[in-house]
Length: 124
Image (cartoon, rainbow, N blue to C red; front, side, top):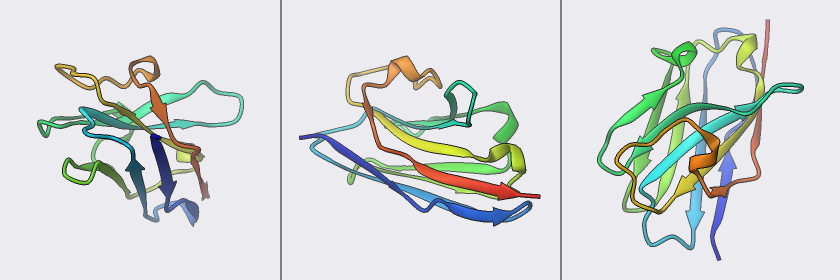
């Protein structure tokens, strides 16, 4: 049975840092893994993605502040978030896709497996 579990969320002040982690079980491999977020009243948006070949993609608003890391051997994912802003406040979700893809998008429909989410709250 496939499972994704996020951890590391919390409450921080603007300018602070958090590190999110995602552990998985039940996968032989994950070609793409990604972090998505959803704030109240807003659509879910892709934050960062990582391919098994090492390539990464970021939402423009987090470039230079967030760093995604994927461990292919363990099928785990992390997101180091720095210089956090109140606009980063959201529920953060880990997603995974085992099917082959040339590149990993930030579109939620490209991922078939999801975690339950971890809350990140940034206060000003």
